[in-house]
Length: 125
Image (tube, rainbow, N blue to C red):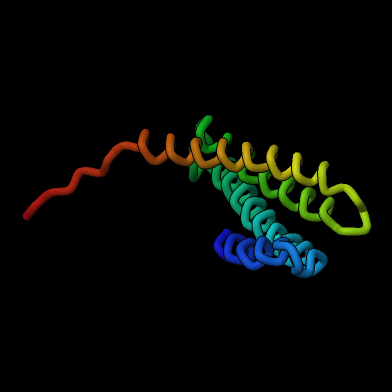
């Protein structure tokens, strides 16, 4: 997730007036590919651990996995829709917005998982 997130910043700068929109689109496509790769890895490893009995798939964890994967797929799709010759930037914008809501859902699910987990007791010696 980290590499994809870092690449989004220079990609945004390339969409400023007078900059190279095609280069910005390429950077966004690359960044979002990293986001999809990370989300897919989380999704597959989470399901694998669940089926091996190593991890209980709670509703919050399942929601997190699905939302992060869908957010990544929608961001990748939106990035491709911004290719200048496609003339589909308006659809791309709405796809980014929907993807953002999925990422928000994943973040809220992560928050729920963190704050609903039992706190480990520590002993002082």
